[in-house]
Each structure stands twice: as structure tokens, then as C-alpha cells.
Length: 67
Image (cartoon, rainbow, N blue to C red):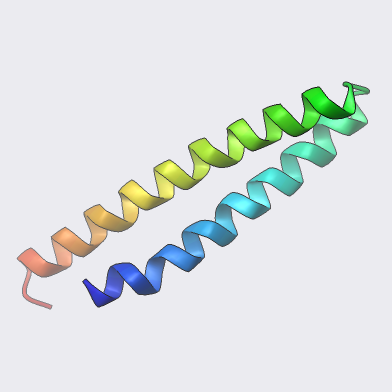
């Protein structure tokens, strides 16, 4: 369980990076600022969910392997 607590901050960092990259790209394509923020936030939420699930799977696999 402590490994999961170690991995979650990296999930948050990954989601923040996804937001920043998406927002920058959406701004370059001349979308409205509000629409760009909403879409970037949506992409960041999906990224965080994916990374969090992946972190849980890694913890469970390592726990099963008794590492």
C-alpha cells in the first residue's frame, strides 16, 4: 500500500503535464480559451484515471509476486 502512495504523486504530475500539453496544443489551433481549458481538463482527468488504475495494477502484481 505504501508503494501506491508513492506512485500517486507521479500520477498527478502526469495528469498535470497532460493538461499543459493539451492546453498548449488546443490554443495553437485557435480554439476558445474556455473550450481549450475544458478539453484539456477532460484529457488530464482521463490521463490521471489511466495512470491511477495502472498504479493499482502494478501494486497488486508486485504484492502477488511477494516482492
